Image 1 (cartoon, rainbow, N blue to C red):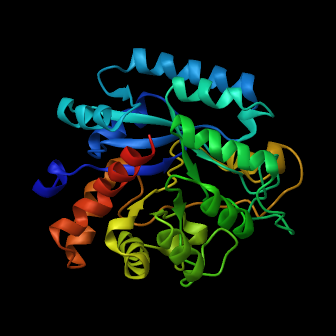
Image 2 (tube, rainbow, N blue to C red):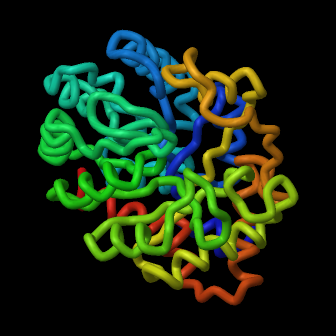
Length: 322
């Protein structure tokens, strides 16, 4: 590791991997301070609570490597202790079902980030693959207000543009795209236009930049330097104080998992082609985060900019929301 990397707060805004000790060991090898770790996508309330129960077992069995984070102080303490802080996150609001009371229950279990929709329509609003974006529902307005009240970050990465704009306007706290790329470099339903990126920043929001190969301009041929260039594109649009990263690492998963993600509700209509994913050269594993810092240094970034984008900006955001 570079000396600078050792000293950084390194926060990954989205990881969805096959959770277990190999992943947690890779986090330690990569010097990862904290991450938003997906524990619910299509699952209902009961199945999501069981997933959180499984995470609690992971925390007990891997206490030398990971710790649950409910506050920014927990994250900084994990850095001091040489552990990775896990922020439990959802990529959908299906776990809330149609009951606002569930939101505070999940907050109490350590859920800190929730995406409003996952690609398709739900009770809250429309996903980015819906042919018609109906906007934020009346129930969705209630969900946003309750998430604001209890302190859960509203994530808009897989959300449709109209629904996203209405969440941004409705929220009394900052919201985020936790893992997205710019449509200015590659047109794709999951990528955000310059106008969308400026809009969220102009409304006190935040952008986490992903490296998921199907959304990168270079696709499966991308390198860690291509990823840094994509981050820089967004920094130049919205400013370095409003940008972090969210890799979308899927360590341990194969085509069957991507098929599950790419079907509405996990089993219905197929939304996109099933991807063959090759992560950028130099950043193939969660253990490779030192290479990301090194690529930023090669690109001529200042130490302040590196510190902000690698993690400090995320902590500033979460401290305001939580």
